[in-house]
Each structure stands twice: as C-alpha cells, then as structure tokens.
Image (tube, rainbow, N blue to C red; front, side, top):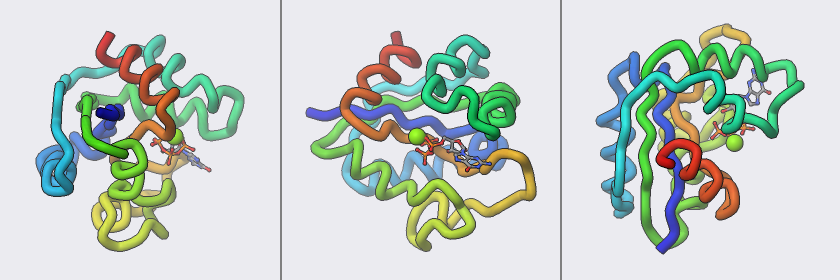
Length: 136
Ligand code: GTP
Ligand code: MG
C-alpha cells in the first residue's frame, strides 16, 4: 500500500480548515495512519524544501511554514500520492480548479509566498524521504 505525506500548512491550521481537509481525504477513501500537530523547526523545513533553495520564494516559504502549527499526516491508499495531489489542486490557489482543496478554500492574499493550505508529496521517492523527515 502506498503512503504519502500531507501537511496542513499554517494558513490552513489558523483558518481552522484542518477538519475540512482531513474530511476530504477520508471521503475520498484514504486512510489517516498517523497525525502530529507542531511548529516545525527551521532545520526540518530546510531539509523538506531543499529542492527550492535559492529560488526567490524560498525564504518567504520557510518563514511562512515557521509561523505556526502545521498538521503532518501520514496517509495510505492505492495511488494515494497522485490521488492527494489531485484532491489538492494546482499550486496557485487563484487558478486551482473548483472542487479541489486549493481551488475551493484558497486564494491570493498578496503575500510573497503562495499560501495554498496543503502540501502533498509528489513521487514515491519524495514521499519516503518526507515521511522519514516528519515522522522519523
Ligand atoms: P507543495 O505540495 O507545497 O510542495 O506544493 P507544490 O508541489 O504544488 O509546489 P512546489 O513544490 O513547486 O512549491 C512548494 C511551495 O512553494 C508551494 O506550495 C508554494 O507555497 C510555494 N511556491 C511554489 N512556487 C511558487 C511561486 O512561483 N511563487 C511563490 N510566491 N510561491 C511559490
Ligand atoms: Mg512540491
């Protein structure tokens, strides 16, 4: 059975959308295997977002992710990696399709970083690496 890492980012937690997001995951038929809520340390975020280091949005992204609690979720199911990416919608919440988490619940707040409510691993390799970082 495949597993993925889902993060409810600080904007989702602050807006009290955690239940709504977890509910969409469960209604799709995926299983919540483990869940933790905490404010991540810079070191964890640097490892998580290593592929984006040097990009213009990298520092604002890390600062945003440090700004409050995150809910980290281990989610299981057949093809859950692509399935959750589909549920989440595309990166920019302004144009993410209606019916998706980002498309229904997100928008542009005029900030340096796109606050788009959730993260989902994008491949089997990323999922294994990220689950190791967030769940040890
Ligand atoms: P994640 O599931 O969070 O990894 O999102 P993603 O896979 O859709 O996007 P990606 O991994 O490319 O980027 C990680 C995060 O950086 C995004 O979720 C956004 O918060 C932010 N980001 C990515 N691209 C841009 C961009 O072009 N501009 C800005 N301002 N932020 C961006
Ligand atoms: Mg990504």
